[in-house]
Image (tube, rainbow, N blue to C red; front, side, top):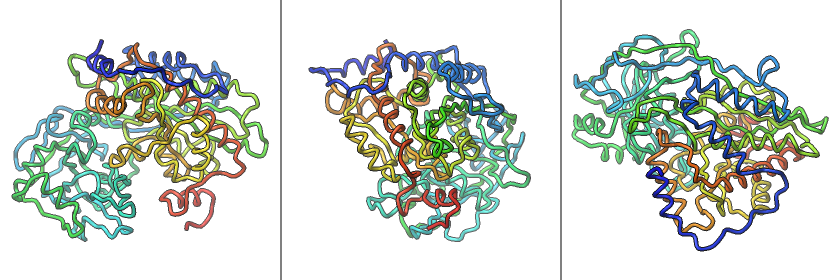
Length: 543
């Protein structure tokens, strides 16, 4: 038994059996979900890296299941596959990086990528500390304060200013301003040469081991257009390196972060030069989404659709941990694919069929920045304007059933009442985001669909496991996050209990069926950040 499994087993102190699940309205079985997860996370698939043998095996398997269920192909040219053209960039060992002439060690002290998609890029310049690197007019917040950073390095923290006020950067809930993707985008808009995020566990929401695993391999990106601006280097440095950088202005990471949380923060020129020579392997990536369709039964509504998604990719083969180089991704996200496939099977047997069309998409390159879902949002077989909702599944624990589900962001949509009604039918509570400061809404594929206006959210189990002691689920999550997330130890375990994933699948099925039959296309609540995109897709004026 693996150490984590042993630790979890010791925690199981249940003294009573959980109550039975609600009456099944559709045939959904734990063992079928388990079989999909077991295969997709097997060593044979080598961690399901993008543009690898593992991709070919995983995507062929998923497509073959869709075909077996009798679902129509909805990809390119009458196939289940939608090509997603990307460029892969991988930093090579010949690269060098130094701060004030002190060379930094790749992976141990820094990671990142050359976003210019060039085989060799030299970047040397002065640096400026810009706090959180945020310009947010609606919150009267500007970390740049008009300072010109063109051609310079910017050093900053991820996340955003601390607040308990929900009207200021969402309070404890992270907004998109706090995501590392926004930091690089804003630095690019301002013409910076490069951007370095100083990592802390608190601001990132995870340890350096996760950053290292996520940023050490090939970075898949949309191909740049000629003349399109991009950073010479977008990367992270450890907190220890951050302390060395801030020591040059006689402060520390902790104090610099405290200063960055103040409204009157002003950019601080750093008395250092950052120099890098980045040698990269640049290649075109041939990767693919897998899309299937169940046509709707209502002639008036079948051109509209409910979209289910789950990403198939993980990190592939990477730096060995305890001799194991395969990042299997059992929880992240073979679990979501297992749910997606069982949903597809259930819908294929549904009588009567739902009124709207049902789309199933297993997308690529989520780990590389939601690239597959980004492409799908812009090239969906059913346009975004006619997508009723996107229900996404990503990273589910097979530890049994829970008394609560998580659906971060559902309350932002006009589906709020329908979601809560369905939850009552299942006798489950909807758990508020347990870690709002980590910005989970912006970290999974539903975000890509939300950006083009589609009411979207992920559906997941909560932390209150039936038959387990209070706090058991929270401890299990913390152990996974620290020991297995984006690590080779995210492996399938024969002791897992898939009853909770089966109930979650039933819930997703019932909710999707209900959405497919609502008379009007859903939207976003007044004032939501994605409402303008929804109205734009409908050809209406923005609020």
